[in-house]
Image 1 (cartoon, rainbow, N blue to C red):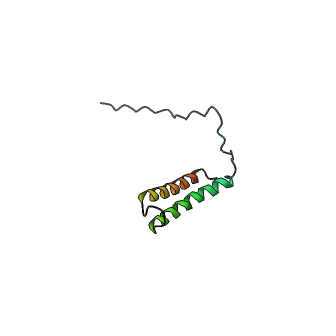
Image 2 (image 1 turned 90 degrees about the horizontal axis):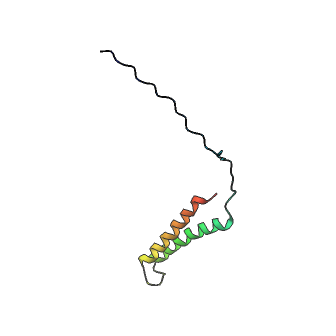
Image 3 (image 1 turned 60 degrees about the horizontal axis):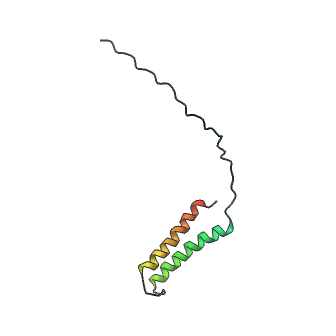
Length: 84
């Protein structure tokens, strides 16, 4: 029995976008207050964690202070995602 030839698939090109995408949009550097807030949150988080472990905060060593410090560090690092 003869072997049939396979079909060739047409070359598909992606459809072009309706509006041209401009990658040259420049937003400028981040404002000073943004950078100061970002580093202040990270620094305050570290200080809270250290003060918790050396028992300087009211209520003794508490997981609440630890979580607040970690949250401050996390928010500071989250702000770095929008840093320009």
